[in-house]
Length: 119
Image (cartoon, rainbow, N blue to C red; front, side, top):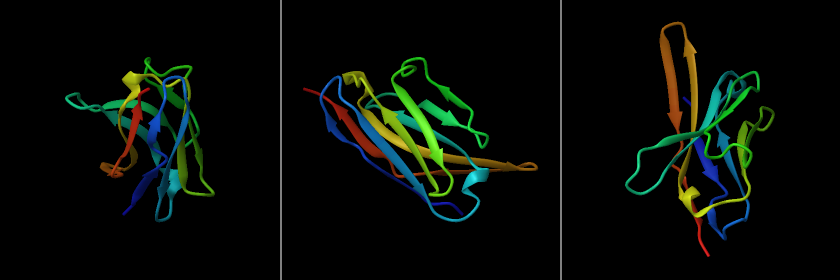
């Protein structure tokens, strides 16, 4: 069992920056691929960024060049650095951990943190 707790959300002006953190409980954090998703009101949840156990990253086209995902396995934490924020980045951002062992897939979600970009 893995518990995920996000923090770092808030209200920021357009062009500003925020850094989200997702702290994971339990062991074996380094064996989980980690992702950030977001969901705006009335919209479907979308993948924002992901990082593999090897540190390879992938981003949604809408955030490439502005957001950076990273992980610190010693601290059991994954981060999302968000720069040049736009109003359309407003959403609830959630952390996801996933791991597959043989045919069993383990997926865990955090409770989410609100990010609001507005002047």
